[in-house]
Length: 115
Length: 113
Image 1 (tube, rainbow over the protein chains, first blue to last red):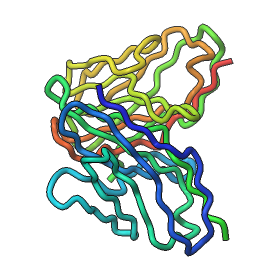
Image 2: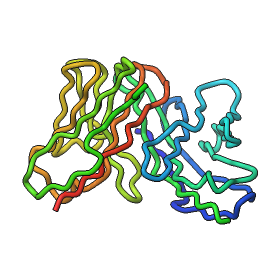
Image 3: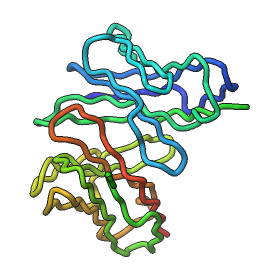
Image 4: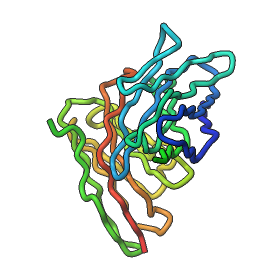
């Protein structure tokens, strides 16, 4: 069975500072990896995903994540955060299961950007 | 374009009461699912459906029933609510068997007293 570990439940960071949100996964089969973001009182939205090809993927708002197969990681980074990035971030892994793609989420990391 | 619509947004129940959380999507997605979100536990899959008439259990199905009579609707039923079912519930959908992204509703906050 696959699993996703987000090592940090909360990450406070000052505005304009860099940030890294960590995600590690375990799976016996090939995986597809996602980062979702949840703003207060909203549902989750896809931030970025890795399916194949280049191991570095980027979002439209400056986040990036790198798939590292040897370390089974998919850490999320941003070189300079803004107040509007305050949200909860979920790493997710998708694996084939019984004819469909089963998605398993991590426990989430709350990013608090401090002015 | 409405996307995934969940109702109600908030609900308070007494132990033993029953209720149905509604979920509808207008994107013709084959795959629909229900998650519950609890502090420190992330999102856990309750039930999912890969098409009308087809449903299956996720990680935490006990205490919940689902049915899928149409492509658009995927209601979640609590037959006898328990305090352990106090949570935020999200419905999500996506196209078929693919790795397309999940589209989430805005959630239902349920309290069982």
